[in-house]
Amino acid sequence: MAFKDTTERNAMNYYISDLHIGHENILRFDNRPFADVNEMNNKLIENWNARVRSDDTVYILGDFIWAKESEWPSIVGSLGGNKVLIRGNHDPKQFSASTKRMFQEITDLKEIKDSGKHVVMCHYPIPFFRASFASTAFMLYGHVHQTIEYEYIAKLRREVKANSTGYGTPNGNFINVGCMMPYMDYTPRTLDEIIEGDARYHEENPDAL
Image (cartoon, rainbow, N blue to C red; front, side, top):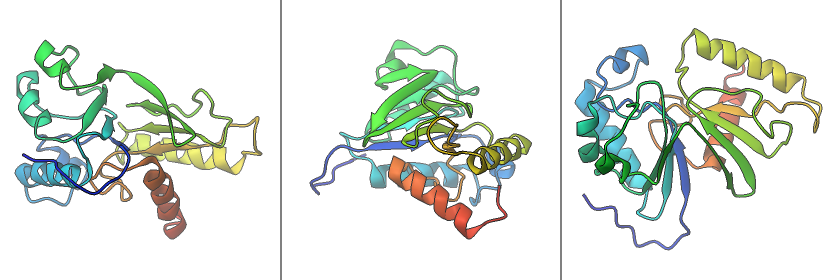
């Protein structure tokens, strides 16, 4: 599969979580808009490769592929770009050498700078993360889908934001980047897209958690 795009631009960072490639039950669990797991898999791969170039990096925040570890290389190899896996609870605990070589890194927690912003990434939400007092710091997570845990963390975020008074208090900048979220739409997104999409979603849906 080719990932060639001749349009000139700098290498980009993208983020996404909880793709659950190959997981049939996730269709019902998330109410995903696909007829079957094959349609979902194909759409996730199509969306990924429509955006991601060979020099881009995708940070995958866990629960990536629902398959035996021996099946991972063929699936990972169909996806463009450099890949960093922040391990989720449904990802293998151990990886073979051949699978490890397909990732730049496999870890449980990752912090980077992206366009002047501090980004903390974990499969699990960390509301009071390092640098959470800074307005330019963001925590990206997955795991909770749209369950009771999602409701708890969303209510906490709303309260934290409502009581933030600037530097010295937590900013509430923790965002769910699960692929099923409306602003993700089953597609790897840039940090700016995630921040803007999350804000727009809550502006347009004031009663949403």
